[in-house]
Length: 251
Ligand code: PEP
Image 1 (cartoon, rainbow, N blue to C red):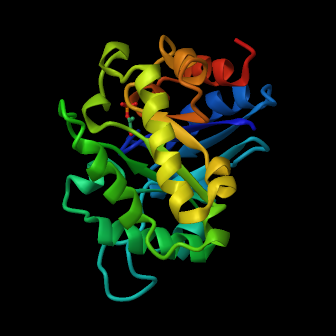
Image 2: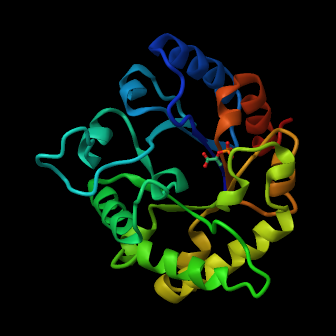
């Protein structure tokens, strides 16, 4: 299976000009790569300015949990799809920190899937404890986030395991590839209980949390990650392009 690399630009850059320039630099590299799928998730206002390519598609960073109505400032699943997104990040820790519950995440996941968007579901623990109690919380989170998602819909899921404590730092802040692999297997088991073994095996589990050109190959190799979600390093085209080439196997 092709490795998937997701770029989460968060609330960057500031201007449409900068967004176009950053995207163009990534696209020039993407055009030469054959063995990866890239999803760039810019702020929603830039989606319609960017032209996706064959292996480079667009995603949104969030949607509202209702399909339409009087919800000032919100963006619906259908609107983000019409703006050009084929994927949508849901449940990012930076949204959960603002009060987003698993119940809301679940509503968004089901709405997005029904709208025909592929869901990039982010989840991870805020801290680990010696008795590994956090694993129970992680399982509960995944079960609640995917409650009432059908097997047919589950084919459009991508899961990102990103320990919250690992987000936003340097390469040394990241999890280890071995720990990622262990947690990805754990999440696969939870998925298998809900969707069956075969379907669970086909759902990609990506790693996110301080991915850099220095540690990306280890997560994809030793960590056996199906791909990576890249935050701050996706804003530096030269460094992000190194990650893309590593994921493509052509670095
Ligand atoms: C993220 O945005 O989810 C993320 C992992 O960011 P960073 O790569 O900056 O840690």
